[in-house]
Image (cartoon, rainbow, N blue to C red; front, side, top):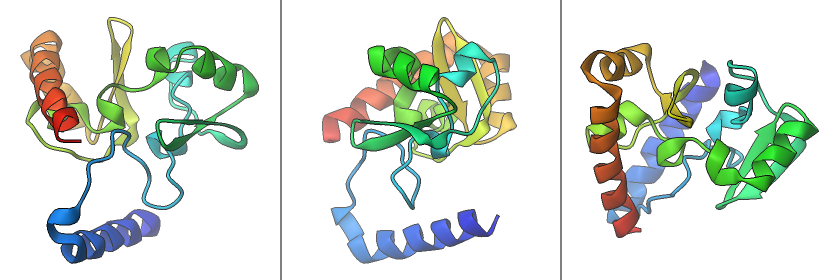
Amino acid sequence: MFRRFFAAMLVSILFVSAGSAWAFDEINKSYLGDLAVDGYDSVAYFNTKKPAEGQGDFTADWKGATWRFANAESRDLFLESPESYAPQYGGYCSNQMSLGNLSDIDPGVWLIFEGKLYLFGHDVGRDRWEETGIAARIQDADKNWQQYLAKK
């Protein structure tokens, strides 16, 4: 809890001091350590159907972020096809992306739809997607994601 509070405060300070110089990162990275998916194993969502914390012994660098994995098998699968295992929208909250916003995630709130991993900041966001139509929310999020990528 303290780590997230400290990180949020640090980001607030940096954002205010940077002003309009803030740059969009294609991969949502932890504030300390440049970890994708807050250090969780993105392959585990597919293989074990649950979140798993990655280990420092099993890492890969991809798109400017460090990806951690629970084991060598997950790391190797990711390296063979990172686009297949990386979360959509660079690991930003899928619900917020469907609303046009960048937001952090809770690695414990996720879903896999049509073979793709979607992460969320809160259960409420995932519930919104399920209640209002996942495919429609993906269309919204895809459109907004393309706008963010175009600004990069």
